[in-house]
Amino acid sequence: MSQQSKQQPLPTSESHHHASSRPRNPHSRNSRPQDSRSHGSRPQDSQAHDPQTAQRAAEAGETAGCAGGTDQAPTLSLMMQHVKECTGVARDNRHMTLDEPAIKRAAQDFHSQRLEKGLVEADGAWFASAVDEWMDALAGGEARLSEESLLHIVAGTRETLSMRDAMLVSVLCPLTRRSMKLLASDPHDVNSAKTVYDALNGVFRDPGTFPDATRCATGLRLFSVVVEAVPRKDRAHPLACVAYICWWMGFLDESRRCSDEALRIDPGCSLASIILTAAEFNVLPAWADSAVDERNAGDRQ
Image (cartoon, rainbow, N blue to C red):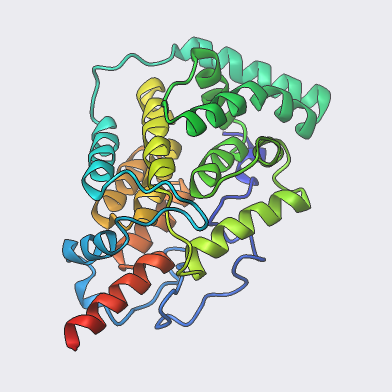
């Protein structure tokens, strides 16, 4: 991966200081791990490896759509089915992958375009069609991506992580097509930074922001399409995104499994490392943390 890609912001990395400028109180209800060294205990840490903790959180939010949304059709069992399908993908060798020489040629072409046109212009043109297909798939609920879009995604990700981040944020919260293209092409733009901040602020701090069950289910299937299509060495980043979505829905066991698999492939995948830390220390998204607290309070009454 190029030096440029290492400098690209991640949705949960320390580079977004506006989202969380310092580690929060390790005992606060919605504490957020900054990296593998800056986490802390929580009141529920004794249950960190208890699968029932995440299950209770998921059950409490089973009928919740995203904030302001009305689509509540998928049930917990349906979402779990999609999660299990995604977590099994990394070990399934039956699916065909993109041709490695073709990926290398595309990556070299992309690199040359970035040198010739500049990062923003080249990235915008490179990812435009893939963004359109991704947004159409999310809106239509069909996990289909063309071979060309998959090739641009995987070849582009070898050079920059901006498209990966845009795809993930688009699942966490609804984005306009324009916002996603801007996030994919110019992650340092002030509007891109605000988009990421708004998404993360709801995930980490607002107990009234819930996962959109339909959007998450489609997003999981879309990322599984990417995982199935790419060579094993390119699976770390889409698997880390699957881990993030699983964590967002409260499925800590599945999140831990996917992030661990991503790190086996690429130990330097910081997104997977952050999500694995969150899952291992039972750090839940704000909505799930609140749901567990309410359930526990009800049990004590």
